[in-house]
Image (cartoon, rainbow, N blue to C red; front, side):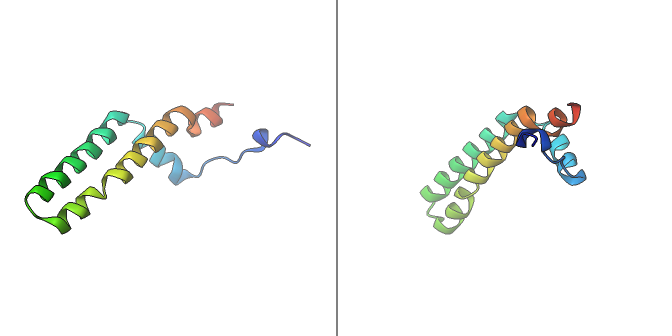
Length: 84
């Protein structure tokens, strides 16, 4: 019986394409876009634009998650497993 890590499946064509494109961006981009969304939401709150502020403010978490995905792709992406 082979260990589980030896029998990993390969990434699909679409996942490889996404990884290749997202890995070109520095991880800082996602952090700064997230901070920008939070700052914009704060300014909109001050301007009493509550609904727009909540809408924009909810973008912060997905951008941070995109940044985590970006970092994981760079460290553990398909190119690491395809070379082995």
